[in-house]
Length: 512
Image (cartoon, rainbow, N blue to C red; front, top):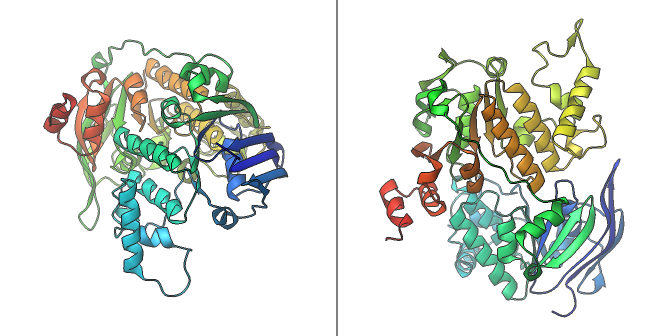
């Protein structure tokens, strides 16, 4: 492959008490797809953000095309042909696709029609089918990711960094993305993608770099390893295989009952449309769907954070439709939100403070009118141990932890708060394989304890492995509720894309 296009030599990065990157050295060659694997907190995103100029290295060298470069900002990186598609998109919803793509690249008068035509041609070239004149706020999340990729391509990226690129995609969209990665590299460009999904690694990568505890622990060619061996290299031991115990949930009481629930905005648009379902005690109801089709609104409605305009919700026979969030918490409903930054934590507060936020008014930590911080700290330490959270101590801010470790703490708190019902919205997104297994084990334990569990996930394998029933959601409505054995990946993918039940059943049989 010739001279490496990227060389990172002996990179160290320290955040206060935490050594995030410990003597990291790696190379990327032209035309190569490199997968970066590792547990949460292993330093994968940090080393890539250093390459992209979002973070500054504490020490070490970065060479691009054999020349040492001082990358201080993303602009410096983009000038060298380095672009990064981050896990959390950086698009402006109120602007069009074209406006987002050209933002920051021009001064003075812009020939908008010419730019829109170029975006359309670029989209066609890679088979993305992105409407260049559409507003980003009106696009599904899968299309928004393609807009992020087009931004990089429009800036003539030749080194593309992708952080968890398939986290929000349906199976058909993942296939398109993997095809793009291979085609892009075949043109002589380089791709580095951070992922926890073995299937994508084995499908697209040429070489795999494994990181543990901030350092590179191994580098292997894809052709020389299996997915099982990779998992062992990443977590240091064989991955535990979970088995879902048989359940007679249908004989148990209906704990959660949702009757003709709709949420309608003042302009007449419906966020939820006539939902009817129940969740038994000891049942996991999975929700499949492309992000943005009402899953978030359903969670908020069940948690009291969104006003229900029609219908009712009952918990153990009691109408809780219009009770407040505070009352829902007191009733034993836990909620693990998909957007932990906005709804699940306060970044500048300590781990201990975050763990007691939602229960501060329940009297659990009260000692003669004062908070018993010693008890809260001990509780936080127990959660840290149980969920294998990588943190120096309980006094550090939760914002200083990696995203995966933040998620583990939020999951631990909500499982503890949800004594009757636990709502999981993307609980394993961004987690490494070992942590995913631990969280999935917890979900099954809550089922075994007789709780009602609502599980929303874009990981279809997770829904198939854990759910007793799966509801497919599209544009605020349920397409249907199925037993896992009555679905397959192709059929559920089509239903998630809005294909009718009859068409999906025909498609799953290979018919047009």
